[in-house]
Length: 484
Image 1 (tube, rainbow, N blue to C red):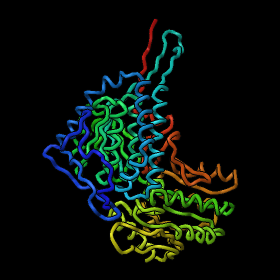
Image 2: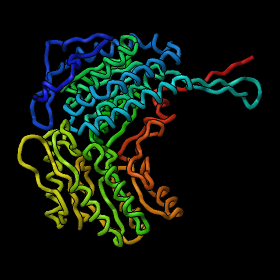
Image 3: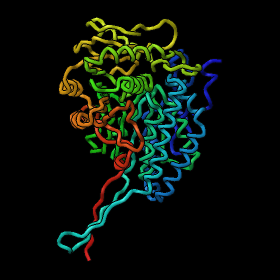
Image 4: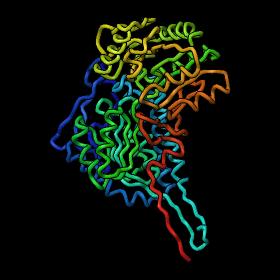
């Protein structure tokens, strides 16, 4: 059976104003299976006119949606959570076919992504302000929260559900309408989600999904439209910088979740086996195609050999193959260009003196596969020290002093997440206070949690998604002075 035949039924048109429609002019583009390169679907390729229609629909729905009781907004999200959870297997197949990750990884993302629907269904009824007495006693000060207004969300390909739900759910909970532009490599998951939200009772126009291969051309006019009030983006720092510049003219509220270069520190007193367990999670979640993926393993010289040997053994035990196959741990990378980038970074490190402990060779045959790879003796001048790898490659660097490890960790323009393994409680405080990142995992390899604020500092962006902070990104603060 071909990948196309395995694809569950999923909409392939634009979702605008509660209706499915073809792109103006009927244009489409192909969605391919990374495991084979075969086309699995053709989705609508939106035009500038289609983008404008989506924003028109969001603007038209904004007033009524903002006035909808918070409980009603929350109940729609709760129903959507239940539907997504019930249909996990269906969505996992779609996600694996378009993105490449194994079914186990797809199911894990669905569980994670669905939690944003549940979390923000509960936060909708907790939007609150405050009431106080002016210092002179003459007036009363009322502070309230109101939806910021129509939102444009641009989401990436690596977590096609979760990167959508953690933007869509708080927007809906806050009373904002939204236009979503999913990544061209993985649009099917978002189209499927739009269908689910409609089924859950979301009114027409509150969510609009525009698929296109011409992101800048179609989204640029929306960003420049004065009716748009917020832009939220997850993707590369390079694109994020450009979007911030574009948004400045309209003084939009902006949230940017951008690139990462996560350090993974292992100190001399660490439980090495626990550190290896954490490394496998931090490195191999989503085949390494995650902004939170450990990019640099900074290991104390006294435990570096033990850590590297055990990590190599674990990486060698992973099964590589098409994501729909039984027992597969590592699927293909999302496209040929991504695999070529990973291969080039590894070749550069080897050319500068790194030692290959396992992997490091592009396999023959169809699909964009790259083997789990461990590199030791990696020189500081290797490109993968400063560039985000976004693949299953673990480079190991060494250090001698704690201060040196923290300095190495901070020696990057990025500041999304860092990981550290140590059993010294005093060191834990010194490390998490000293690391220049928005998130830190101590003795654990995963930090993402819908109940916690996700986001970075420096070139990793600004704004937070998840936690109680996540809904604030979609709310404006209004102050009212009450005389009496």
